[in-house]
Length: 569
Image (cartoon, rainbow, N blue to C red; front, side, top):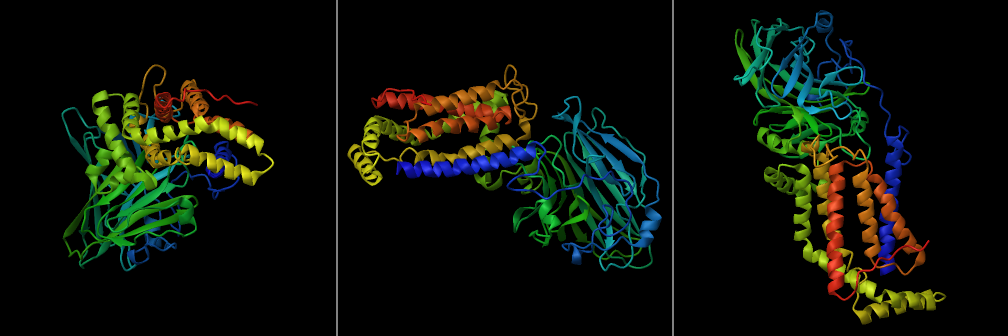
């Protein structure tokens, strides 16, 4: 049984090393050895693109074909009159971010967060939506004709911006930016963006005015367009998701890799009357939100080389001549602060992606946030959370360490027996099982209690990795940013030392080769922690120290004096 347990551990360890080497190749700019990803072309600098199928500025397909990979070309009449229109950029500023608009379509083309420093250059702010040589990322909206006949104002239509305040002044809580389109196809589109103090959510009102002599039934589209590149400076060791997301009440959180869109292998709900669409990356996200009860068609698609879109199309009821109809929506672009996301829309907090361990990760984050509310330091909050978890699992750990202590007590008999029967493996196995029965030792007794806790600690790993609150959050002394690696590698070295100390306290495997390899495992495993955020390493050190203390106490109580089993190489 002991050999089976070690074999299972070796399989897990071997697979982990394969994954680690594969990601190390990517981290150093090489192609992945075992799990190659499809290559992506660099994002194009954007200006007015040709109005053709697949263009970044092409209008979304009608609702009837929204989920299709093919996109009809932009009508030539719109392309000829609009693509040549002059463009103007204007930036408005609130207390939390700066938002840049383009008069071509009244689109949002840049968001800069004034309270979040860029990880690569702390003198700069984080920029999410952007239009530059390295990034293509927009929030766009406009109108299309449901029957594919006729043209209406789109995100390529040259719009006029109305005069107004461009900076949120002290004592003022709101400011608005209003864009008006010319008449296109007998329809005029008015977009009003309302920004509020302390909020990354923008209220967006689309007012459709029928200036023609006949009723019209346009469709409103809202979309996010982004290149398929990972955020700059993102470590391959983090394994975080970057890409489009759709959320509906029926099918919940549905995400797709850019490579799946490339291959047209996406499976999302096509129609709904609730939910949102979003673009997600580590720590930050953008999303278009419509109110519940509004029917919408959902789509993800490729629109150009290394450019992808996620969005929704909602039909408007017939608008009589000389009347108008309005649609209220929200555009969110900001950090993934869980409480703020929950307040905006059901399920929006899921853009902070914990993966399949969400059911465990959410309560852990809640507890961590509560600890921070009175400790006022995220580093000490991490330490306190691990202490509480170790207390909660105290009896499970006690059983595990008691089993290890028994194994340690009988280990001399096992070693002597293996040496005596080394030429008779079958008899050796039978004798080993007899000793275990006599001593009432279960070789798996130390594994099961620890395995039960593994999902909890993996969930905590994702909480610490995903929480934007860790960015630029200091702990103590030289640790000024819990989301970045320790600049002097002191914490990883301490973590390695505590891991080796734990290994030394464990029963030494009877097989000499296994005994030697059990020392290499923590050393190799520790290498990864030199690239991990300091907050994660702090959590692991705290867990190790508490485990060593508990193991020491239990061994002493059972009459098995703590002994360091050092390797013999």
